[in-house]
Amino acid sequence: MIGISKLYCGTVEPSDALRYSRESGQLPSHLLQFSKDKKPVVVWNITRRCNLKCVHCYAQSKDQEYSNELTTEEGKKLIDDLAQFGVPVILFSGGEPLMRKDLPELAEYAVSKGMRAVISTNGTLITKEVAKTLKEIGLSYVGISLDGLEEIHDHFRGKKGAFKAAMEGIKNCQEAGIKVGLRFTMNKINSKDIPGIFDLLEEKDIPRVCFYHLVYAGRGSKLIEEDLTHEETREAVDLIMKETKRLHDNNKPKEVLTVDNHADGPYLYLKMLEENPEEAAKVLELLEMNEGNNSGRGFGCISWDGQIHADQFWRHYNFGNVKDRPFSEIWTDTTNELMGQLKNKKEHVTGRCATCRWLSVCGGNFRVRAEATGDLWSPDPACYLSDDEIKK
Image (cartoon, rainbow, N blue to C red; front, side, top):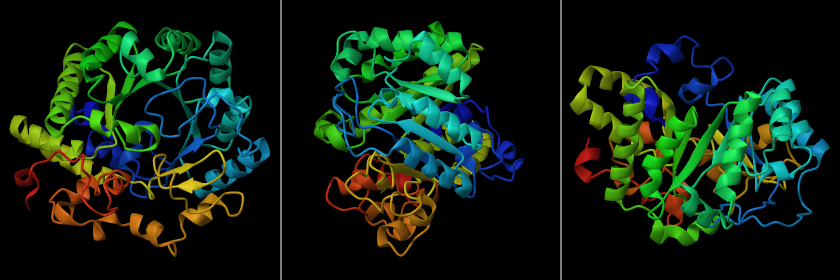
């Protein structure tokens, strides 16, 4: 992820991360992306069941019972291993994580083991009582997905009233004193609503938003034609930077990030190089600390059935199952060829990626998106940097 507010508005300095020796176990959550040990942030899709029918769902969830989910006790055993391994954050996702009745118990257990627990949810099930419970168990953050304003969001979520229910969930979190933010996946259909999302941040006093680039996985693989073109992506990132700066300059700062396209880092740096070279040098230092895409190294995923993946989009390939071996053992076993390669992608990428001057900043971008075009190590088709911009 690329911290637009951190980098473009200068809310974070390289010295901020260095103060904590860049160790995952010591860094505050907003600085974790600059760690040097890259202990993995883990997404655990605790259930595949969901009450909505999102057209871009990477898990292809449905509102039905699934018999192969990890039990509560298996989940606690998993959390024990993650905590001992030094995982700084566990993100409970789904499907819809709140459809698992033991979510509060599992999240509270993770907190008791010293991890930061967050959830990614559609927000529609967060009643006042649920919000109160999430606050009591020590949840660090609730990310609620909005795919646009009301009409577009309800279309994407496959249910009329989903937007209003999500907004009610946001309100309930705020009243309970839980930090809450938005998650927005950009595409041709909803990019026009980006200004409206910033208006929501301002009007509803929402402190954080993550803008996700589309990844071709699950139902999202059917939306490739709806992905933004390179020029449209540039326009969207420009707009996000502009709106972030506007709020910052108006003393209404928000934490704004873009996710799943690490070309955003060099693109932002090149913009700043024109506008403010001195600050741009600091931005480049932070981007080099970030290292770009970290799937299979600083970021991992565990499915509802215990399978381990490089990230939540790479479900067609698993490295093993936590029912058979601990996550920590599987994650560090580089005898698996792909696991070994992902630990140092820069040695394996091909084409323009291999000669790109931003390789250490971008990390080769999303391999699963490249794989969707036929070659795992070929350039990510969503990289929108020109040949001139990547020349050494």
